[in-house]
Length: 284
Image (cartoon, rainbow, N blue to C red; front, side, top):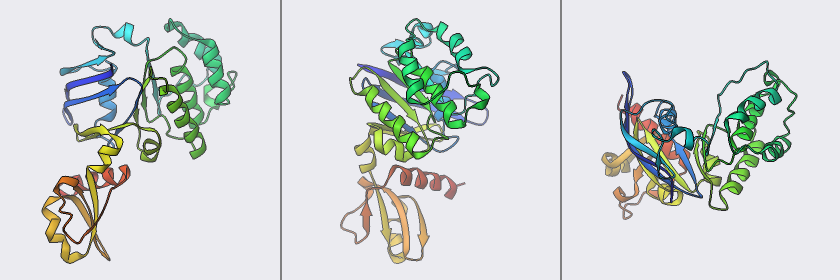
């Protein structure tokens, strides 16, 4: 069964347009949602959550339209945003006592287990928390009401590598039984290389590709060649940069001729993002 089904979703603003965005996430998997700043990640997430109105298209969560079943579905959606600001003068305990009233399936035992795991003192004021601690508190709230779909927008921002690794382990534990799914937007692509099952890449308001992670990276090649070899592939490159040894460029695997004497390797997610961003800069 599909946990999330985004169908041809569009939204137009004066200076930006989300164009027929479509992707699917099955139950029990983690999907990494990547793209440069301004590519449309947060707009897409807000449309999924019905925080802004869709111009056209449809979002289904566990087979139900979010616009028609919003109150019901938000009982089983957990959200965490890296830049959310809370009432800074309130204590954690005071804020939680307000928030948990909105959820029928709120579980105090689960909540307090995450407070202990994240080393959060509920008697501290929000203003006393570091950026990383605020993220952890946000996640503790999201994980404490029986959510079947977690939507996380930059949840690991502000966390040190050890704390990030701990969170990634939690995400993998959550999906291991096949009932919970996670849509995970981040700029820290190494996190996705550790935990994501699928990758969806958005650029300039359009989905470039949505696929299983290994299939996604294997559909590209990073070329390293001499300067006199550039003309052999230049027209097919997504983008490239020259260096003292010649050039480095990204190409679709299907467009590369392995018979050419140019070194080709499978790129990282970060390299794919960088060269797509460089393409935009080359044609501005």
